[in-house]
Image 1: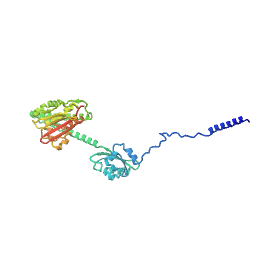
Image 2: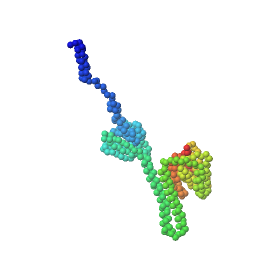
Image 3: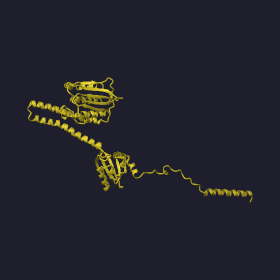
Length: 386
């Protein structure tokens, strides 16, 4: 074999070994890059009280989680109501409200849910004021009790106002109705042929019917105002001449009582955002009250003035005034300082309640000042137009 043949044989063996090695020896395995969605470590999930707190923190009302009498977790609303030290403490030592403790004991004893209303709950136990709560306590199946508190204070107050309003309105309507019924029976019987008595009775009946009409008108007016309470007026209103318009409307009553309306109105009075008819109603009610309760022959002052970003309107009379203890309640429906005198003068007990609701609808302010023996001043402010 020549040297060339030997060299070619060696080269063939080397090439065969190279290709055999590529087939039999596997390539090194390179691991794929980690997937951020699959291979990333899962975030740590808190357990125990921390997990419970995360779950109940999103609830608006106060929530407690108890194991026995130990408070394991409380959301921010519960900590605000009962104090931050309630968490981790014995509820019998931090809350001490017998109705709440009784509900917890009952749920822990038999596992059944409990629902009741409680009052006086707050930081320091029974010293929490007059707030009312609907309490619901239930077992969670893991030996714990969950207490949920729903604040129903406002709902209770609204319900009491509704009941009082219906009772007062019924009473106010019953009196003139009874008077009318009695006179009708008299005219149908003993006074059927008594002409002087009949004329006298008919006059009284007309007065009582007019009183009922005014009361119904005021009730309907108050209902409409409350319906639109959250709809703020949007139109600008110039107040120039508005007090004079009220004076013309009440001219006959002013003359009959020898009274006059003294109006103070600056030339640069700013316009306001207001409903014209309702502003007229407020002024009419306030001037009418000044006519009823001020002294005959004395003037009634109406003053309008710019006051910062508001326009202030005041009505002042000279009269007996009102005792300080009555002032906070004057705007309540049917509240009267002197019931008999008010009814005799034709008052319905709703005038200042209507004034208050109109001023609130306009986002204004209402103030009442009175000095006994001197008189009363009522001021209300309306926001200026931009």
